[in-house]
Image (cartoon, rainbow, N blue to C red; front, side, top):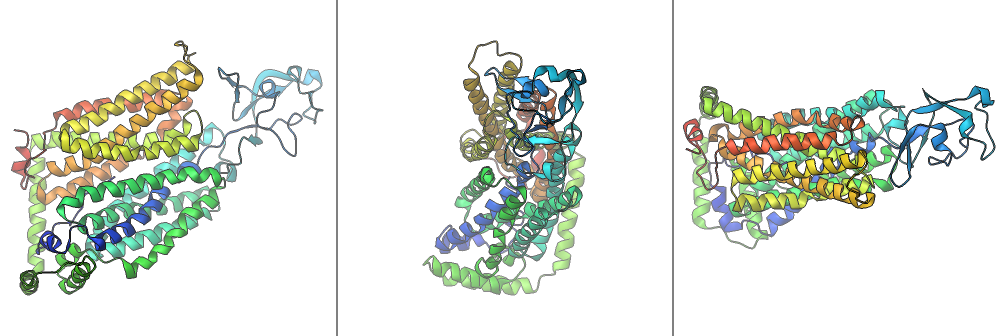
Length: 568
C-alpha cells in the first residue's frame, strides 16, 4: 500500500519548477522509474511467500496393511472404510487429516500388509484414533513435512509465521522511514533489497521451526523498506501531473509480483521456492552505479552540487535545456543555505510538531475523527491480507485462485484512481468498503449453502465459480479502499504532522494485520465464518467512513485549526 511520500516537498529550491524545464516524465525518469519498479516484484513475492512455504498440504493418515509401502495413494478406493471424512455432492471423499478408525481385532486384522481388495469394512470399528504417519496428496513440500507441523494442534504455528511477518513489517516500516530521511533514499533502498535477499536465503537454509521464524521476521524487516522507498523515489522524480500515475503503476508491479507466486505450482519444494525469490534480487546491487539519489532529498540536505549533476544529466537525456535564470537561482539558494542555522531550524520544526500534536489531543473533533480512521485502517489491513491468505482455502486450484486474487488488485487500484477523481474521497472510500462487504457476505452465504446442503439446487461447479467471482470482487473493493485511504488520510492531516500522521495510521494497520493469518483458521470450525466476518467488518467501516469530512477539491490543511474546520 502506498505510504506517504515523506520528505518529498521539503526542499527550498522548487524542484517542480526545474521539472517543467527538464521534463516531468522524460526518458531519464522513465528509465529510472522502470528500474526501481523491478525490485518491487521480488518484494511483493517475498511478502506473501509464507502462504506457500508455510502452507498446509493435503494429507491423511497412513493405514498400515492397506496402504502400499512403496507408493501409497492418497485417494484409495477403500479409504472411507479406514479413515473418517466428508463426502461432496459429486461423490468425492475428503479424508480427515490426523484421524483413522481403530482396527477391529476380532476380525483378525493386525495392521499387517493385506492383499489388494482385502481391506474391508469389517477390518475397522467406528472408533477413531490419532495417527503419526501420513500420506500426502501432492508433491508439494512445505515446513509442515519438514518439521512435522501436522494436525490441528500445530495449526497456530503455521498462522504465527504470518503474524511474525507482519511484526517485521511494523519494525521495518518505522526504521527505514527514518533512515531514508537521514542517510538518503538510494542507500537505504539498496540496503533493504540486499537484506531481504540475504535473510531470504537464510530462511531457505533454516534448520528448525524457530530458526525459520527468526529469519522470516528479518526477511519481513528488509521487505518492508523496498516498496515504500521505491514509492518515494518514484514520486520524487516526477512532476506534479505524473505523481498519481507513478504511484498507481508501482502498485501494478506489486500486484504482479504477488501473482507470480502462483507459479510455485511448478516449484513444489519450499526451500527451492524461497531461494528463487531471494537470490535474483542481489543483481540490483548494480543500481548503486546506475540509479541516482533523489534530487529532492539532496536539495533538502543542501547537497546542491550532487543535485546539479543529476539535473544536468536528466536534461541531457531528455534533450531539454535549463534556463540561465534557473541556474542562477540554484546558485543563489546554495549560498543562502550555507548561512542557515540548521540546529535552530530543526528545533523550531520539532516545537511546531509537538505543539500540533498537543492541539490534536485537545480537540474532541479530531480525536473522534482520527480514532474512526484508525479503525477503518485496521479493517482495511485485516480484510485485505485476510482475503489474500484465505484464497488458498477456496474450492478449486489454490494456485490459480491465489493468482487471480492478486491480479484483481490491478483493476482495484484503477477503480480507486477513477473514484478519487469522479466521486470524491468519502464516497470512494465508503463505496469500496461496502462493495467488499456485500460480496464477502454473498460469497460466505453461497459457501454456507454448500456446507448445509445447497437447497437452491445450484450445480456444485457453477456455485464454486460464483463463490470465487464474488471473492475476487471483494478483494477488488478492499484494494480500492486501501488505495483511497492513503490519499484521504493525508488530506485530513495538518501539514506539520501529515507524514507522521499517515505513518501512525499505517503502523497501526500493520499491527491489526497480525491477526489476519489466524482468521482463516476459523474456517475449520465453520467454513463461511471468515468471509462473513470480513463482510461485517467492512460494512461497519464503510458506514463509519460516511462520518468523515469530504476533502475533494479542498485546500490541504496547514494548521490544526484548518483540519478541524474541514467539512464545516
